Amino acid sequence: MAGHSQFKNIMHRKGRQDAMKSKLFSKLAREITVAAKLGTPDPAMNPRLRLAVQAAKAESMPKDNIQRAINKASGGDAESYDEVRYEGYGPGGVALIVEALTDNRNRTASNVRAAFTKAGGALGETGSVSFLWDRVGEIVYKPELSADKVMEAAIEAGADDVASDEDGHTVQCAFENIGEVSKALEAALGEAESVKIVWKPQTSVPVDEERAQSLMKLVGNLEDDDDVQNVYANFEVDEATLAKLSAA
Image (cartoon, rainbow, N blue to C red):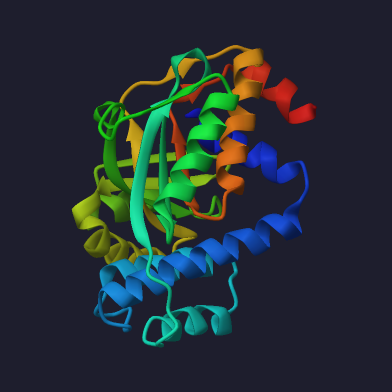
């Protein structure tokens, strides 16, 4: 598995759940508001908004919060956010992609650059690392479903790949098809745990424990920034090191 998904689980286990949940809800609400503002406030007619609402529901965001974020898009006090993508290299030559929604590009760029520099990395130009990744749709179901049932439904839905393990089932498809594929899967399997568009690394960089800790800290610092929506890193860690970090 890629490093970021591994460390996501470790960081959640290390505590700060309440603070992290509050920050997460704030970021989800921002995406919902932006999606509603760019299109129609009806999720059925706005694919991006539908994905944003599904992501919010997957994180147990209250319905009132979701509706408030949608309503905010049509209000006169709705902030105007720019979508920005930052790319660079962290410790050990690991490539990172950082997606942000910001009302102040200078502030966000300064914060992201500082995080990279502090970790011994370097922020690059747009396009400097994204060529190492594929943009794909990712639909996740809980492990209670059988792998065979998920595989059959995914094939029928026109998905490209399915990976199943003890943590659940991850279905991947072309990002432009995620709306159709997720609807077909929902009809066959029920509501997904999450539906989103992600960056999938074409290759992963193996890192040792020291580099892994540095990367974990860098990813955490980036995600702590209110403007940062998503962080992707193309590293992987062996099982022994992962178990050691999990126990720390």
